[in-house]
Length: 436
Image (cartoon, rainbow, N blue to C red):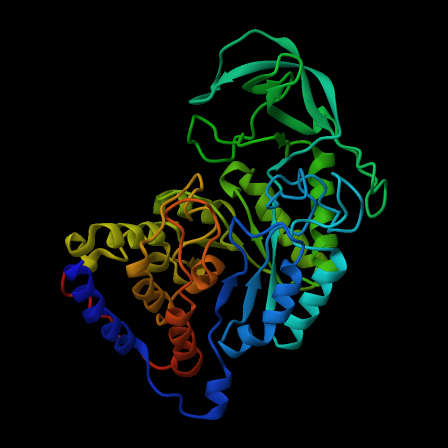
């Protein structure tokens, strides 16, 4: 602990000193570098009040230099309590009675639109969360011929063909054909992980289907992640998701997009999808992709395959922060930027400390220890390179039931945000010349 405190005391002043020069004019001070805030954590209460919280917080966010907000998935999930990543109906933004509720976990469509209007009035951009890898909560099962594949190598078939009952029919009884008359059937998907007839959890690939090949090669082929896996080789599916992307951006007046689970989605489709939404909306639509792998080479491959037309979250930098926080004085600070996106492609890196996937209790839990977080935020918020993101859970605390929850660090992050807003100008000089 004494080592940690000494490291904290030595690094924090240094990090501030690396970059800040006073602004030369009021005009320069108004030309702020952007700061993104992820305005949710996994364990937000299911009270339907989150869009109202966001609206009420908009003045505070603007005051502290937040220039953009990433909202959680705004559409109906598998239930009212769904965080949003079990996407059921992408066209139901808390407007129709489906899955036993009108509102989503976060509130109604009207409340969300009011929150966005409030953010826009303060020049804060809004990022929509895009979950288009899979669909969950189907309305009915369908009989499908399928084979089982090896979870560790999805290219290896481990059973003969047999019939299963798959949850693949989506007809949206509460919405009907409002906004879209597209109804989903088994042939719009590649596979699933549940046979309702036998109550078996396996990875099933449907007859006549092949996993999309332009994805991560983890587990042989990492097209399949969960629920009913969307088939982007089906032309009707590709056209429908492109139509939805344009509708989503226009309906909510979104400015930017955050795309979930991209290593499981056909890369060339994502490239074309981003270009399509930009063309149809007439907006720049800055887009960041969540490609979760601690491997710069894999992230560079994705950027290349998508023609560098959008950015990625800097996952390797997050893991460097995690290592630094858990190894204490044993971590070599000179290696902090090794293998990171921001070091190689600074204009394509969204830097972050923690998020809803890395927080305690989640499948990718790799939480940066609390003592180190002010240092990590000082690092990303005072650098010229990279686009920094602040996590709601770090500002307001996380509300899970583990013994490892993140405490509210608002009082420690606020001064760094204010410093970025007022003084993040001039030349940057790095001094990574000491391991401690």
